[in-house]
Length: 275
Image (cartoon, rainbow, N blue to C red):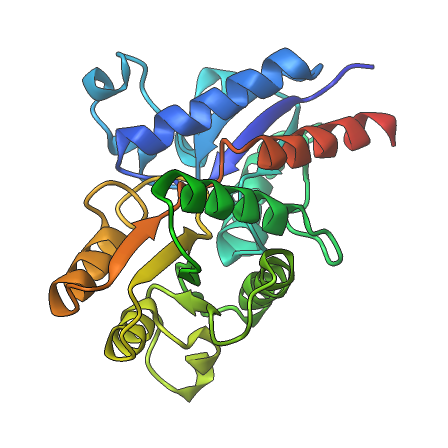
């Protein structure tokens, strides 16, 4: 079977650590599947100085499609490193690929599904493993758990968080009072109220209740300006800790390199071959 080149696509980042993580996942997929897998961001990643990336320039969809390699390829397989159906995948990326396809009559592309699927509890299992490992390492005693994502204007993406959160709560055997999903940020207006509660407000509430231990479970795939060291989430947690010194806050790691997430990605490529 003549397989297309596979592009492992994330949202893109200006942080080198996000690019390195994406590269490690792509390299492992290349080794463990029959595909050549290349790491590509939707935006931003090409702006990182190559000296911060071991002298290897990061690619975006735009730079790849306009490169010599992108122009010579006839078929592309897109493997999204996205939790749910972001507009970046369902609209922006499709527009770029359609433009590329129209340049030559024999070009084609196929976009695989994002990571989460209805009834699939594996993302919740991955998060539960991270949470329980952190609880054990830090010798925590029944901490509150806040499962946080970025926040989204797309209700379908929010549903992914809520489905995974419901599964996670059951796996952890937590009560509703000890567990909550939340968002890092949201747009103004009632139309986007499904993102509530925000992490900042949730930590304020728990701090006022005298909660002493909190695990912030990152429903994020890669480090960056939000989930990375010194990023937005770290600042929110630091501010809450300063207001409520009794409340110790711990964060799990982003999920992209978790073995369960890797297994989902690998499975998607294997299914594509066998179809």
